Each structure stands twice: as C-alpha cells, then as structure tokens.
Length: 369
Ligand code: NAD
Ligand code: GLY
Image 1: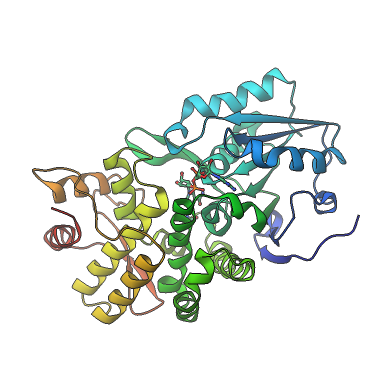
Image 2 (image 1 turned 60 degrees about the vertical axis):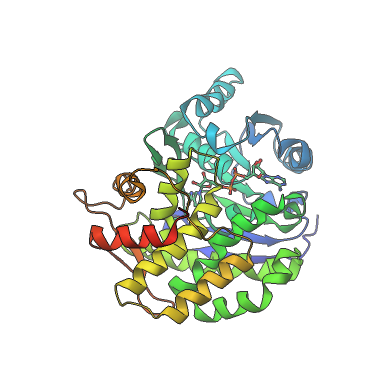
C-alpha cells in the first residue's frame, strides 16, 4: 500500500533512535507500521473521549500486520493520571495473555501517552511501544523524548521512567476534533520553543497565530515539525536531563505549582505552563537577564494564543508562600533550592536559583488579588 506524503523528524539516540511522522491521514496507513517489530498482540491504550473517534481506524490499520489488536479505554482526565488507572493497563495486559513482545500503542493526549509509556517501561520489565498523539500538546512535546509517568497527590509526574517509543505518528487530522481550550493549551508548549531556542520561530508564531488557531493544516505542520526538531536537538544531547534538557521546562516550575495548587485538571497543563512562562520571563527581567520589551512580546503572544497570563491565588493568606512551598517539590530543586528555567537574552535559556524575596515580588505582581 502506498504512503501519502508526510514529514519526518528523526530522534537521534543511538540504538534508541526513532522517527516522528507528521502529516494528514496517517493513522489509517498500514504501510507506516511496516518497520514495527512482530508480535502476537497489540494493545491500543486510549480513553473514553479519543477511542470512539479514532481507535477503529487505527485498529483496522494495525490488524493488517498483527493478529490480535485489543483496545483499552481509560477514564479521561489529568485527575486519572495515577496508580489506579495505570493498573487498568496492567490488568488488561495480564487478562488478555499479553507477553513481553506485546506492542503498546498510546492513542490520545499527554495523559494517555505518559501512562502508556510508563506501563510499557514496566510491564515484564519493558515492552515495545508507539505513540499516536492526538492533542497539539502531545504532538509537539509529550510524545517525544521518552518521559513517561504518573502524578502523586504530592507532586506532578513524580513517579515515572525514561522510556523511548519506537515510532511517533502525529496525524494532524486528529486535531480537527480537539476542543479550542485544548488547542490553546498545546500552543503554550509550541510558544515555549521560541524564547528558549529559536527567535525566528517566535517571529513566525507572531505572524501565524491566527492560522494556527484556525487549524490551517500547513501552519500546524510547520509548528509541529519545528517544535519536534528543537525537542529532538535537545533530547539528543541530554536524554536523561542531566542539564540542557531542563530548558524544555520553561514555565513549568510556576506551572506545576499552579496545577497542583489548584487541583489537577482545574487548569489545563498547557494553561498553567503558558501563565508560568510569563511569570518566569518576569523573574528573568527582574534578574536583569532580559529586557521588558521581550517579556511584553512573550506576554502578547501568550494572550494571542488564548492562554491565561494572570496567575491564580493558591492561598488567600500567603499566596507567594504557597507557590514557593509547591515549587520546592519540583524535580529540578536542589537541596531545597528552587531552580528556575529563565530567559537569558532572547532565545537562550538558563537554569538557576533566585532569591525568595524576588520570587515573592514576581508572584505578587503576576497573581490576581
Ligand atoms: P490530555 O491528555 O488530558 O488531553 C486533553 C483532552 O483532550 C482530554 O480530555 C482528551 O481526552 C482530549 N483529546 C485528546 N485528543 C483529542 C482529539 N483529537 N479530539 C478531541 N479530544 C481529544 O492533555 P494533554 O494536554 O495532551 O497532555 C497533558 C499531559 O501531558 C500532562 O499530564 C503533562 O504532565 C504531560 N506532559 C508530558 C510531557 C512529557 O515529556 N512526557 C511533556 C508535556 C506534558
Ligand atoms: N517536556 C519536557 C521534557 O520532555 O523534557
């Protein structure tokens, strides 16, 4: 069967290298699965929202190569990214006689992708897996680079593993059914690549945000491809986040505090990251690393993408104190010192600490009172 055209971004990780395919009508193309390993069974892990939309097409395409293709529908939502839901994947694998060659396929957004990847990393000490991301956020970030895991009530993504997929299939057509709010949330992770790595891409985003919001497929293809290229460049140098990879967490230190402080799911991950980027940029400005004009540009782009830029109040009595308490749980923290990803001039990021008093000022300035 012939393949319709698509673009490829390669993730270069020696024996763990793989490709990201980006294009339209990919999930129904049997030929794209030709390079996957042989197995007696495949488990597509999805959720109650995405499976009814896309699982049948994917199952049909995979059935040409695999004799047994099973589908599991998890409950939908960040609030379900936990042990209990993870166990549903292990239950399905064991109840259906799956083995160590069984291929796991994540069909959904970052929540499904992170949980399926972690299940693949741990079932029988590791089975092959593939990502079919269906949100903008998961196509530009979470499906690529091998971070997998679940949340703990005390902190986001606290339990997990680095485990790379064999293939990532970004079918842009799936974005047609994405709710507007989720599209904006995904744009936060797209925008982040500009200030940390590529000023030209930031210019392009300023000029093309309307096309992205209108889901113009060529604009989406460019945004997904450029985002994946930048992520590939970072991950190839620092797969397990010994240093450089932390820059991909721009906006996430404040953002994770917002998500945990509000209760998972109240703010979408991308919304929290969008607001968190503005807060991190303001902290960078206060530290003299970047000028006010650049911060204003980033803020305007974030607003243009339909994202919130005013932080929520997490505690009426000591809001900044609550943010600091939550941010100390961040995985980048070192001996209790919070490490922030900051903008060190346009398109250059640095990871460093900041005095609590200054962070408090920034939180006070950025949050609704
Ligand atoms: P999500 O997975 O919750 O998906 C958002 C919503 O959109 C869900 O309700 C989902 O069912 C629905 N949906 C998905 N695809 C759809 C489609 N095509 N049409 C209609 N509805 C659709 O959220 P997300 O924003 O994709 O991912 C957020 C998660 O990703 C967070 O848990 C975050 O921690 C994680 N993440 C991980 C990494 C990583 O490197 N592993 C990076 C960034 C974010
Ligand atoms: N999303 C951040 C990372 O993959 O490192």
